[in-house]
Image (cartoon, rainbow over the protein chains, first blue to last red):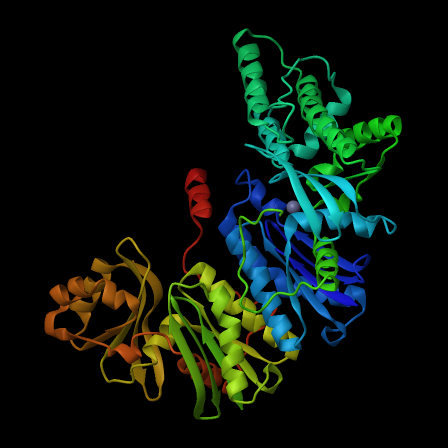
Length: 334
Length: 232
Ligand SMILES: [Zn+2]
């Protein structure tokens, strides 16, 4: 079964052809990062304008790379949310028109679920159930995956997403947008015990996260150092901050895995590309007999292949959308 | 030759089909519901009623603006995908020209789309034979500025578009008996006008490319404007 997938939830225009939910025939990603850089972040209206200008090119490139034509496609899968409303609408409108013109089913996919499914592409043998941490610029979720389309939301951030905290701290130490990946690089050089930033665990009873206090602590530290005329070693700030985030993420994920008797932990989303997070998860996993899964770097970013995988698994589990569906910018994972 | 046309640049969703010089179906709905939910089901209803499929259409057309940025993209993404799948030609039509095309009178025709904060997207057209000539090209103007121009340069004016309703009192006050308002039926962009204008352009070989066709916003984004002004 061939799925043609479209993803336009933020600043990546992406189209992919995926076979049977796990085999990627093409995954074309056109990033607008360079365009948004000068504005210091994604400008929604500009993102939407770029999507409509490039979507049909990316679509054709996805078909050509896969070596297929429209008539070979069995299913259209498209990101329905969460994301920027204007950006999502370009992908959804294109997808609906394709499904109608080709007279094939269409399925609206939850972007966050897509991030999880990137792991089904990367690890052909991976099957639910598993415990899953989804971390990106926009999201921090802890879920228990009971089936391919059955995600139980157990924990979430109460304020900033983990990736958002990375970007904000990066900006405060003078790194260009997007700063998250640069923090990871600096952290490797710096001393993670140099500064004792708080680990906000909220309390032991919930799996929710909070990162705004940590972000404020970093900003306060920088201000105080500046006032006292102390030298700021940004490598140490990056390493200590990253460690404070990862300690909380890793700890809660393992706590949930143990509570649910999971022997598999899956990490997904943009921050799943973070080397520090991967290493820490793997070291702890080795100790506790839990296997760690994460996608390759390209599948961690926003891409349509993961949407194609999620669409396929939803479809074979009996879900199908109609041409009257709308985008859901604030869609949550169930 | 069958032409499918649509417009989603205002609250009105309209789609229709002409076959040569005959209108065979047109469906317009004005409501607060999103174009996203309504558009493709409406197209399907029109085509189903006519026993047609997307494959039967020879030319695709849509309003490229000005108008609601999001609305324009919904319409364009839809026809671009149709043209892409069927490998048929596509033509983008100015929303303002399509509005003016509703009114084949000897007067000056001035379509107005509300651009909020006392501004309108507008243009000034005059009929020349069976075609419209733009005396003033599509632009965004303060309503008072447009009315000054009209009062200064013209005597017989007919206006339409949602902007002519929003600013009706201002228009009457300034232009008095120089101006006439459109009938309700001709006040909104019609898919049939989009189709016909596209067909005229097709006959002149003025075809667009579905890869590159994009809305004509007439306005840069706020972020771009602020960035430009900071750079000065
Ligand atoms: Zn994402």
